[in-house]
Image (tube, rainbow, N blue to C red):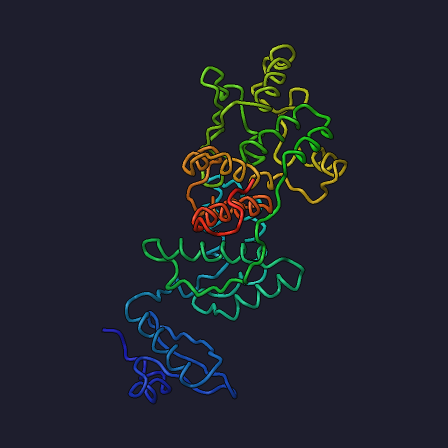
Length: 375
């Protein structure tokens, strides 16, 4: 039978009758020191707030200790340990955004890595998030950091035994980055005329027509081009959700692909990649310099390649393609992503107004003096 801690720790004997297996005492105007036992050792924690806050926190930690949720290993585990565990998972999964997530995790380890998991508070997380804003990061970028942190705690809580006793509440910043802006048909032709490299023209056509990510386009091999069925099947390990799209071959993609295929068979038959420079595969991000030069000369300095994604979704929707087929072509998993990217431009709003007006006129009585036909 384990020894009674009150025999060697009088402070617990004084408080045990009133506060169960722990105690708290005032350490300042709004500071309270908690003490409780875990595996025969004393644990301490400082709570800032009212006495009621201290009592509620003590009740929770002593209850967790009684259920075995506060093991000796868990009490020593830090936020840095949890984040490194999540990074190892990302590396095993070969996450498409691995470099970005690695940078996020490095920032969080620098700021909160030494804090023990059981002592992490919402105020600590909010302080880190505010520091990102102070450094000039956007609310959306700060939220991406917080999403990685929350994912790390969720993964750790699902382990057996759990690596953490709880997932802390994490508040996100409100975002106002509504996805808007796209290319009209005349803008597409104008930008295409300012692109010099044939490989970039084909890449631009794929982005505009299929709404494909740059990484998925650059990873295409000739073996994935099925000319007989007139489709292209991009690699499955490129999209972030690992959902494979299927791209139909038509129009500009077909014309430019034929030209690229001729050069491939004539000069580079041994190269498996559709997109390359003199036989060397174009790496992730290797298109950006040529893309920046073309968009600036065409008068679209703020256009990102990823912006073509919403253009493609809008064009497919306005042409009457079913939502399920749009999801298949673009490679999205849920309709929520389609609603997120499908943008209605001013011309679409005007057309909607004309349709409403025609409908309302059709309901008017014959004796109404208004005109019946709207051209």
